[in-house]
Structure formats: structure tokens, C-alpha cells
Length: 306
Image (cartoon, rainbow, N blue to C red):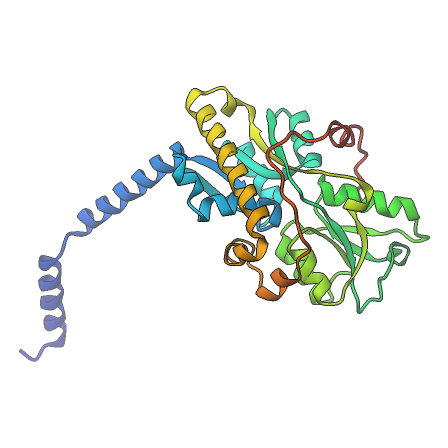
């Protein structure tokens, strides 16, 4: 038999007769997908970002704390708080990492949210070393990367308005925290607003901190939950266990130190060991509601368009 085409056909027929049919394989794949979707729908879904305000959640997941107390938590990783907003709007998660400027705005738009806890998130305004941006007054006619309608937007405007540079400062919307950092490192942006660990990476590259929200006694980080999830009995039980696991993780971080969880930080924050070694000492607190004075800051904010 010297016909190569005929040999090929016979080989394919032999192969197909030995294995499962395409239909059978497809049915198995669809069953697995359906099972995964059903499992995910039952899980307590949390939208998180690659930032250290989410560390207790990551530690609870990686250390098996969630499993040990019997709550199935599914983490939805997003590179920006805006993406967390979107999947919350669509009802795809129970709760999310965010900031008060965003969540209070969402509430005014009709998304019912309540707060599981405030977080230790803080933001720094960091100037480009090559652009010689060393103080806020140098930002006139320059660009700063922020995310609209957020803590970064609010804090940047607060700092800029306090100095009033002679020339306008251009607020550029860059939602992804990794892109924002890389634009600074690659000299594509004059200044950026960053939280940890991205702020530490920026400082390690000899960029200059021009403003720190901690010095202004402003605490805007939160974990928010869709209020409807606090009414359903099963979800309410999941929430209770989530809070219990969160507090257990907080105790572990404060007791063992952040270095102990370097692998967790590298996995979820996509950072390097040098950054972790240079991180400031961060204290984590048990679940507690945001301060009234921080919530009050969100009222009547006039968002700028430039």
C-alpha cells in the first residue's frame, strides 16, 4: 500500500475507533464546566486586587484558614478597583476590596453596599526621579496617573489644591496598578498614586514621595459587601465565617510578621523579594467599620475633569 493519503485515512479511523468520540469528550468537558460553575456559585466570592490591604484574605486562603472553619471562598483577582466595581455591579461577587470614594459613589448610584471592615490601605503620591519631580509644586503642566472617582483621584486633588501650582496638573486615568507603576519606572508618567507594595517598588527605584495619606489622617480602604448577601441565611453564615477567618489571619500576620508570608505576597501581588524586604512594617486590624469622619469626606466631592 503505497498511497500516503489512504494510509493517513486508515490511521485516523484506527485512532478514532480506539478513543472516545468527540461528542463524548465534549460532554465530559461540559459536565466539568457545569460542576465548576455550580461550585463557584455556591462559594463566597471576593474581588481582590494585588495590594497589601488584601493580605489577610490571601493568608486565610493560602494557610487553609477558610477551609479549617468550613467556608468556601473564591477569590476573583483584578488589577484595578474599577474592575472590582464592575463585577460587583453585575452581581458576580459577594464582596470586594475597594475604597470609600468608590463605594459611597456606587451607593449613590443605587448599588446597595455595607462594610465588612476598614483596611490599612494608604496611598502615596510619587514623583518621577528623572523628571526631577520632588514636590507637588513641580507638577504644573505635568501628568499624574490616578483612577477616576477613587481615593487616588481624591487624594491627588487634595494635595494639588493645597499647593495650587501655577500651571494645571493633568490627571491621567490609569486604573491598572501594575501599568501605573510601570509608567513611572519607564519614565512615561511624571507622577503616580500608589499603595503597597507597588509604592515600595517605586521608592526602591529612587522615586520621590511627595504626599502620604497617613500624614493627613485619612483612611479610605474598605472591604464592602452587597447588602443583599447579608440577608440570605446561607450567605450570612458564610460572611460570619469569612470575618472569623479574616481576624485569624490578621493575628497570624501580626504575630509572625510579613516576612513569614513572603511567598504569599509574591504570589498574589506579583512582586519581588527585594520589595518585600523593603516594605514598611504594616499593622493589620480586626474587622471594624470605617470611621464616620472618613465616610463624611465622600460627601459633596467635586470630581475634576482634567
